[in-house]
Image 1 (cartoon, rainbow, N blue to C red):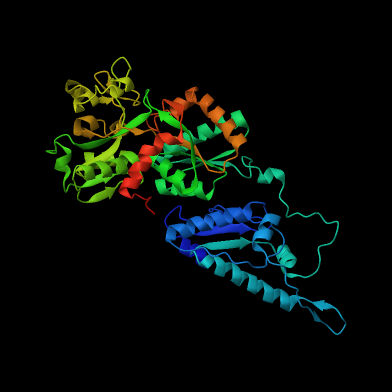
Image 2 (spheres, rainbow, N blue to C red):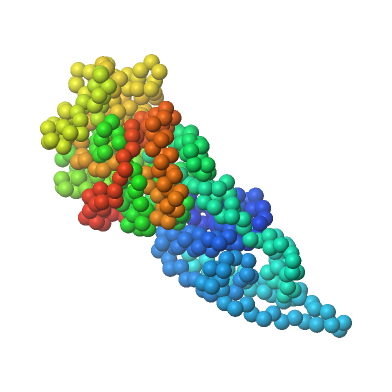
Length: 484
């Protein structure tokens, strides 16, 4: 275990490497508590372990070979039927007095079974740490029968198995596109609201990347729900059947755009000028940060120079502001006019009346006046409010609008999603969807999911899988795959 722990410290955060596995009700080792563990004595424990190992093997390009071996009958019957052969007869050595001496056989079998387990999972470069007690070792390797009438303490209770219970909370996965502290604090508020409405328990999880979010949903298909980009959703749906429930509405828009940003004093005036330039973007799995620009730049015959993965939209804007990159790609949202309405509507866009870059921006004469409001909650420009990624760094960089301008706006793409794992229980999903809609009508929504510092969902609308066919077509056309 110590060797495995030392090796795990060298792995990237969030990578599947150690999977603690419990064979009975016992305390996990302190050194293993930072990792998610599975209960092999629960009905679905073995299946959960296999899904995690399969996800890991897929990631490293290995083949998972599951061998039939004998293990003690402490897991579910379903696991036994699928993977366990008939228990071999154990030989025992008799003493002169006729008593049984199982110790030598106990040691031999213990070593043999440990070797089999390590050999099986060693194929995928992942360590499963089996956590057992000394009492269980006796159960596993002794031939003495369990006394009749003794209660089987290894059988989990219904509560322990129930998805949404304290022992098995539903995971809400948040893609790491904005500040992690904002996500964590807002996510906890959302989880508390859903808990109050449904009596279900939730765990806020921020994976290390877009790809890790998709991987987690496929590895835990029955107890995960996530905020996914359109690209992430299309790939997750194709990989394991993740299903969309809602799409974001931002000030009346069910679609979004990418904006290409440059320093305001830059001599770059068109996409063609980006040839060979240093490009900053959040993540290779980001739809508007990377995917759309990749397709559009290729269509325009433009090949950027060095590429810098900044890890977030805010960081991309900062990189452009500081001159660390020549241009960046981040999310665009339509500005608000002094009356609080968007400067153009979705109907205007559909009608084809928005054709010039100037129509996506505030008036030039308002730029000099741009600054955070007195509470620091908005970026205002002579009454107009900036809503795109530049506004997110307004506190630390109050002159960001004067220093960073929009070069171009991309084509429209369906908004990001709130989606469920492919095996999520239908009844629980219905409860959560109803609670989610109710949450969208509260003030807490505005300081969490609805905040422009968070994901900026001004509302949510039911979504259908077919709406993301365009995104799937982009993935297919470019041969794009999630970065490992």
